[in-house]
Length: 180
Image 1 (tube, rainbow, N blue to C red):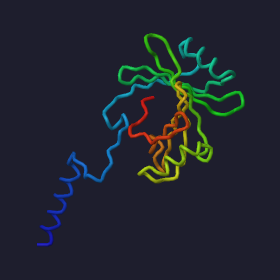
Image 2: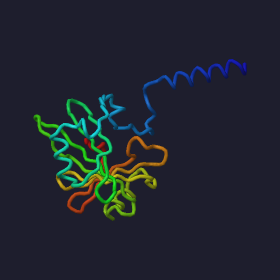
Image 3: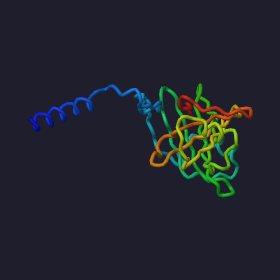
Image 4: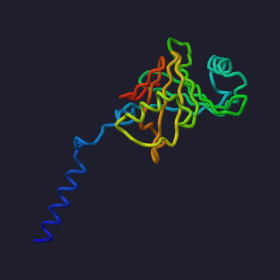
């Protein structure tokens, strides 16, 4: 009788593991990877960047030392992520989007200590359902003047665990991943 009970538990466990449904307490991720959005990535260097992209980047960050770049194609959009260091040695990443054959910067990113984020962003994060101490914070300045703070949790370096948008001095925790 003990063996049949164990077998029944094993069958139940395997059935649950194979089931597509999640228990209600599991939070569904909203990252592109979990929604089935495919991103095609091509590694580049400064010499293989389109001239227009290179010009925009060097005008936005004079003296930039480009250390690498990626061309990303996702949902019909083409992005260039250009990474490098500023003249002062600090790291910077510029994300450009191609629209109607022209490129424009959609955000400029840098890593910052969490303590350097504005108080409004830190307060909003503390009030969020997900409570954790960020191990990495990316400050992402948007072209509309707003700033997105991408907060990464310990052991999860691929996607931010929480994003906070600060615009006009007001902060809000984003419910969905920022599109850029």
